[in-house]
Amino acid sequence: MREQAYKEAFMEVVRQSSKLTLGKVENIKITGDTATADVTTTQQTGTEPPKTDTTTNEFVKEDGQWKDCEPPSSS
Image 1 (cartoon, rainbow, N blue to C red):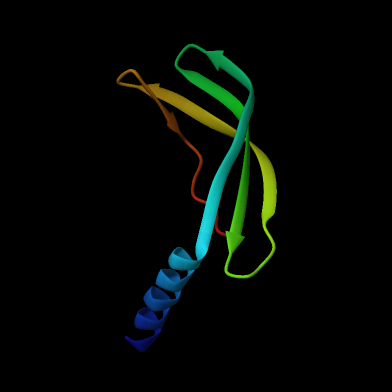
Image 2: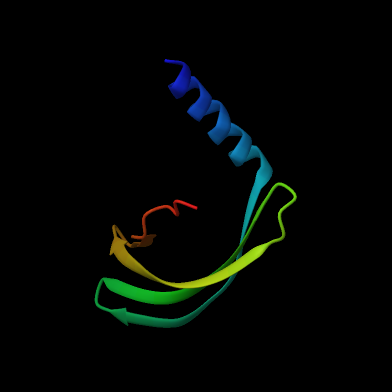
């Protein structure tokens, strides 16, 4: 029980001290109701220096809206 409470408290601190900024979306390729795009984001946690990363994300069109299919980052 204490371990779960610790994990929840730790994740709350991370959420409150983290900032994620979308930089740009490039190289968009659409094929029907699926797409890929290179997404650049910058993440900063606490006093750590910002980390910028570009990944190729997959998207799907559902009910007329494009939705990100990528799982949340574990970092």
